[in-house]
Length: 273
Ligand code: FAD
Image (cartoon, rainbow, N blue to C red; front, side, top):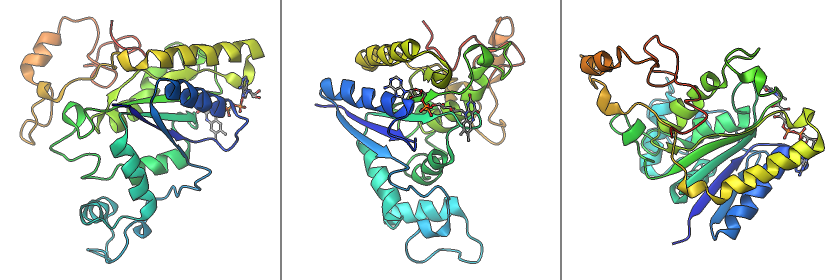
């Protein structure tokens, strides 16, 4: 069966390097026989703010609006706003989601954060019973593909901006892996605005090459839920025996679960060998 890919794309200009990366992905994936859908967020004028207008009809508690609770109910009853339902349909159909964006303030542009806030509603994208490696989207893959203004060395552990692995943890663990996605290594296009034209051509060629083998890639490593005491009593902490087994190890488990040790090098940038 043909695979479905959704590209959630956030750039204002069709002449941008992000547009070129998006176009390359569409072309290479379509050549593989994939069905590719692009959600071009600026063209859609996608609403970024999570507000009561996202629920059509009556609210459960109009006095004290709770976005999470109201949108979960609206999702269950099928009365979320049509733009959210449209995106949810695309997510449901997708085997892989690629988020293509320029890094803004160490994160995604606001319009893409709005997509995350509004589309990945409770019930649809996660529940507190089904999360992380047991999450709702555990059969799907997702990845970030982004450009930066700063250079690669500026995002190294000794660089001015600090270790990019740390920057990526909230999006890759807190959003994608939280919803269950198998997270593929990010495609990072450093500093296209400051490199010579040949280097930009080289970046595009290497992205195309990677896309050819994307489906066989191993995802990034995260700490599975089974290693934690998943109860309020247990504080949702790593089990004692797991912590004891890690005591002599040189590195922590992941960027977030570092146990006070050095983080495993490139934990959020490269899959383990
Ligand atoms: P563009 O400027 O569109 O393109 C770069 C070059 O590629 C141009 O010369 C263009 O002509 C050329 N090009 C386009 N298409 C092709 C093609 N097909 N082949 C070859 N060349 C091509 N950066 C950080 O590092 N960290 C941050 O936290 C950060 N925060 C930001 C916050 C804001 C609000 C803004 C506006 C910027 C921020 N930046 C940050 C910088 C931003 O990430 C970069 O400007 C952006 O990633 C560059 O990507 P682009 O697609 O916009 O490049």
